[in-house]
Amino acid sequence: MRHLLCALLACAATTAAAQVAKPISSRFNADPSPHHFKTTTGGGFYLYATDDASNSGKYWDSTSWRLYTSPDLTTWADAGVPLDVSVFKWARPDAKAWAPEAAYRAGKYFFYAPVGGDRIGVAQSSRPDGGFVDARADALVDKARDANAGDEPIDPAVFVDKAGQAYLYFGTRVPKVVKLKADMVSLDGPIQDVQIQGLAEHKKTYGEAPFLHERGGLYYFTFSTGWPGQIVYATGSSPLGPFTYRGLVIDYLKISTNHQAILEHEGRSFIFFHDKLLPGGSSERRSITIAPLEYSADGSIRPVALDPSQVGKPPKPKP
Ligand code: FUB
Image (tube, rainbow, N blue to C red; front, side, top):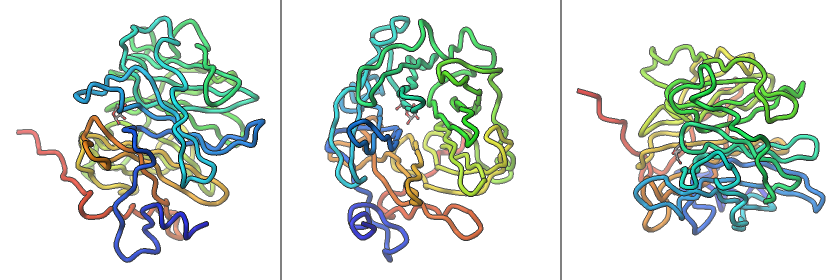
């Protein structure tokens, strides 16, 4: 299995030189939200995405999300549109559909949907590939309604700890975290800023794409540093932080955004991200790819070995 994966993925550990990452689909897509769900029919891998194929090509103005499925992380099937913004009656029909997230609890699948750049909706279904209905009559997070929702409540990411407490991370420029109630569709307490120590010393900023995962009792908070951005990480002893900056995960790409998600499955770790990989690709026409995520013995993440042809440049300093 590992050899097969390495043949298909950018396998940093066993190749002398990094290979150019391969897209999971011939359709433009971005902002991966990968999951392994067990279903009544067996289950497998489900990858929710921003649909760059149906945007204008000039902006991320698609109004629907896309789903891909896989039995093994190597072959992916396009499973179509799991939902679009019309599910949320409070949203404008042309509201942009950005980086999605999904979660499962107690027989229900939940879809967290940044809609229009100022609100995050949540839909639910009894299956992971469709049938989603609005789980509320209003947004889960609303910039106009909720204290400390930040300038742009987008890029939701859900983490559920071993005690079953769910946390929602989101936000640009200032990362946010809020607990979710057990129903997964209600906020439980105030929205807090995520504290990341050591960013200034390392000349890093928080941009977007917050993501939390846990390994060996340590909580890893990954995010993009901006536009363009590197994916970097910080660690802490609580899902609420504070976190301390640890280092680089994915260097600058040759597009304006960088957005990652990490999937731990049966002892293996994979990082999903997007890049300009297909003919006609651009900052608005991105492609999701996968690489193994490797750790050193001390728990530090080894940077993903990108092919030099994929590495971009930092943003120009402001005058
Ligand atoms: O796809 C639209 C936006 O681009 C996402 O919300 C960001 O994370 C960036 O990838």
